[in-house]
Amino acid sequence: MAAKTLQPTIQLLEVITLLRGQRRSNASTEKTSGVAGALPITERSPRQHPIQRVEGIIKSIYAEISRMQHEHISMLQNHDNMLRAYANENASLEEQNRTLLEHVKRLQRENCSLELKHNKQMSEWAKERLQYPEQPDGKRL
View 1: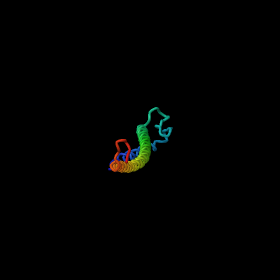
View 2: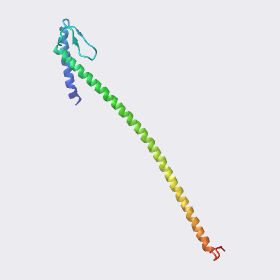
View 3: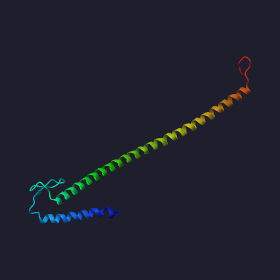
View 4: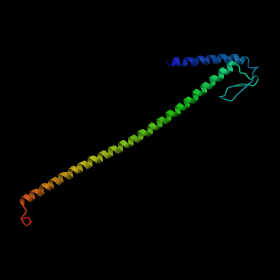
């Protein structure tokens, strides 16, 4: 699959190499100047040779591809950083949840223990009342 996608690029590079070879044979008659990344401009005539135009277009396409790749890599790095931050935050929240759940379970056990104590106390008081019933004057025996 990768060979199929690279084939047009390889063919394009071969064409450029052939075209450059032809242009170099005529290089003594042309004078070019340009900035890196910009299309070459001929000083001799206002029109560029078709080979130079094709090369300029190809260079600008490669520059745009490179810029887009750089932008994509930057976006992926930002995405990875965000995912790491979310993972760290998630781990922290999971730890807090685990701690709170343990605390709730401990409080539930304490509540059950207190309810048992309360029920025992009420049972003891009920037994006391049965053993020592109240007298009509409100005093116990």
